[in-house]
Image (cartoon, rainbow, N blue to C red):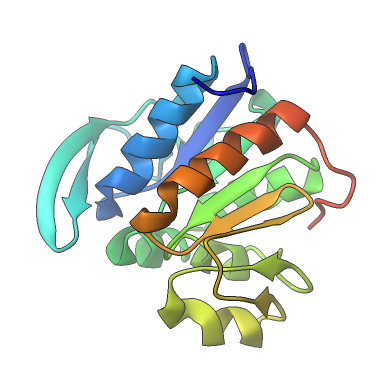
Length: 188
């Protein structure tokens, strides 16, 4: 389906309870369709609860606890949104460290909707071109990011989008950036 082949590339999806379900399932499927190997990483093992807006959706099995996860084992990171998910994740020190490590290793990171909140806490957003759900724009600007209201923004391996309507463009860029690999400009 994708013009970019990412066979054998390992992609971490970092999330917790309250994730906006389609922002997990849609990029996950895009990664699989392009030959990638997605792994669900979360603060705790077990299952987590997805949401469709404010309604409970499906539950998802966690593959790996973030405290046990190492960015060196992955080729890219995807950070889905959902207010509750993103708000809990951004204060988790292990999640912050795991996220920061992808920037330190110059690996692609993709974040949609409320997902970019953790990029502020991880200290990796200053000077970067991003978009997000519109309610995060002040937070991101205050952290030094250059925020614009666009469907998808790509900045040297960092891919961001606003909401589920942007998923087709987001997924396409996620797979493209993973296929391109490391970016020297992708730094913490």
